[in-house]
Length: 243
Image (cartoon, rainbow, N blue to C red):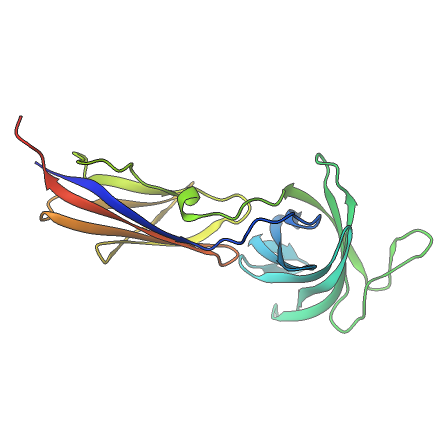
């Protein structure tokens, strides 16, 4: 009876070297959505939408780099993408981000912004309340900075064995909380198979009735921030010995 055995795994995952996280880094709740703030260099950061967030009348989609941020400690400045009345992107709204509390139970960020061309946010010097056209939101951090997802942390494949009697199995992709998956492509021996969206992304691998040989299963997954995780596992169809 033919069966399949894993013969190797090649993994390529994009990951940055570990470093101390800044106070603003992490995932923030914003208008029923979520924004992931990550460092892009010393003192610079970007805010990427990882769950759709609605600001006034238009929705910021998953994957949009909505914020460009600079600063350190508890005070930051930068820009926010606004929208026109037709929901076309209108970038460049000057903005500020202020860490209000670092209590783990109530980690809070105050985000203030002004429409592009309106200058920087302004505040009453006595009370700190926004003035003029400044709009502010208090955001709760729901996830602290975490290690970036890798292929092996996301993709679940059967363990390698010398010979497998089960030649039909399902690949499962675990959902990274801070940087969710938005798509996945699975190819079995160069042929694309259907990826099913449910609580997790899954895809079937069926090696039944295939000639004896080696068959590559390649997975390419993309996260909301555009990170690409990919790897290949090769399975060998074989024949079991007689009882």
